[in-house]
Amino acid sequence: MSTIETLRAEIDALEGDENPVRRLLSPPGILIAPMALLLLCMFIGPMLAIVVFSFQTGNAIALNPLEWSIATYQEVIGGMASGEGVYGDVLVNTVAVSITTTALTLIVSYPAAYALAHKITRYKLVFLMILIIPLFTSVNIRVFGWALFLVQNGVLESIVSLFGVQEYASLMYRRSTIILGTTYIYLPFMLFPIYLSMLSIEDTTLEAAKDLGASRLTLFRKILLPLSKPGIIIGSLFVFVLSLGANVEAEILGGGSIFTMASNIQYSFGYSQNWPLGSTQAVGLLLITVVAGVVILRTIDLREIAARGD
Amino acid sequence: MSTKHSSGLGDRFGDGLWYVYVGLVALFLMTPLVSLVIASFYDGRFFSIVDYEFTLNWYEAALTSGSVRGAFTNTVYISVPVTILSTIIGTAAAIAYTRYEFPFREQFKLFALLPIFFPLILLGLGMSMWASQINLGYGVVPSIIGELVWISPIVMFVVSITALGIDPNIEEAAKDLGADTVTLYRKILLPLIADGVVSGAIFAFVLSWNNYYIVSYLSGPQSTITTWIHGRMTQGFTPVVPAVASLIFYVSILLVIGAAVLEYRSVDEGE
Image (tube, rainbow over all chains, first blue to last red; front, side, top):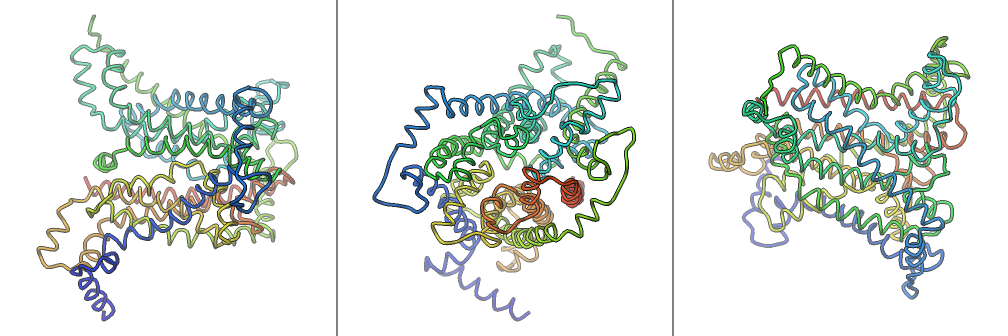
């Protein structure tokens, strides 16, 4: 117990102190410091590295303070603007994948989130568990599972062969297969924000509206939609941004034949060892991510989530 | 407009449809995981449900393979320190944010939670370039530090939600009754947020255990389970891969269910 006594005396001494350095060692300073230090060293630093390297030349892998260039920006933006070549394809694929994924996850999640919040009473925990478990399974494993399901001589083929279907076009290595993968992977990121905002709508509000003669459409337009809007915004931004970074899905399900922004960034870094080129594309992703992240965090009200309890 | 109320039978039928719908979504989410588990027990070249040949050989091969064991050891060396450190860092930040007033408090929250929303490929490759610039190098330790950046904010998020549910006047009351800072933490604050901290720690472990992107950029020559699976998926597939992936999945599922039970219990008590 003596160590605790000393600690106690020391912390109390610190708290009464007006010296700024010593004050930093008492709460909340000491509580903030590890997180702030970690993020400054390993989050801000890496993001700065991406920005700095995007302005370097050639195949620089060490910083050269004398040579700066916007050549890679001209290459990437020029390519995307003309809509031709690799970058034209990358832009079309990426936008197609991300927007379709966002739309599909929204369409699938919205009714499910409503049902979970207001209609499902029995086995609710079981359903929630099934929806949560994929979130905590490696993206590799889930994508691999889809590959096992879809490949020739895979699980799907053995199921449809039971119904006498023998020949059908291969489902792997297409853009729609990548979209299936990203829709699958990011579905929970849409579902849970909407579910949480649906929980804030009281069952009694819905009952009252029905009793007052609101039609289903009115109920949806005047009550459900406005009150679940924060969830829709958070979920959509979350899914959009995360699907921009979808690489494993494109790599495994697209078989390396369809390039998205993420797989192209990976390619620039890995195969062609061109850091400036990869960084330039990553800067685009970074800008979108920061804006979306700040909007999401300003929309989320932690206090409200805490108040909801279950 | 006629105010049409559906009959009891119709209501029940409608409710049934909602169950069917959510059931289908659940089925969709389970499809690849079930496929994986089915494949991991299957002995044979061409997959068939009709004459399914059950075997445990691939699991045995997975558990005795040297490269799998090495990858597994590395994963544990990364996950355990990440769990401990991220729980400490995240909990401390959550306590600061939820229980104290300080300048730039909201900005601190915004900054600290921002990494959660970053695509991991962005974090991974930024860290990879940064690690070479500051001579951090690649391996187990850089992987630990890298994962902390993503996982500590998630722990902070989880613990904050628990901590915000506690009466804000409780510290005042304790101090009025003569509790000093250490007593306040040991006897009041930490026990009250304990469930949140434990779920945060379990999430931290499972997320670190399954992390691929950050590790793939920072682990260098060391292979972890996820990079091992990825490597075998893209080149040199063997039937051992589904078994290894399934093993990883079983560990995750048990821990997530544990965390959920814990969370559910504390919610029940709170009501």
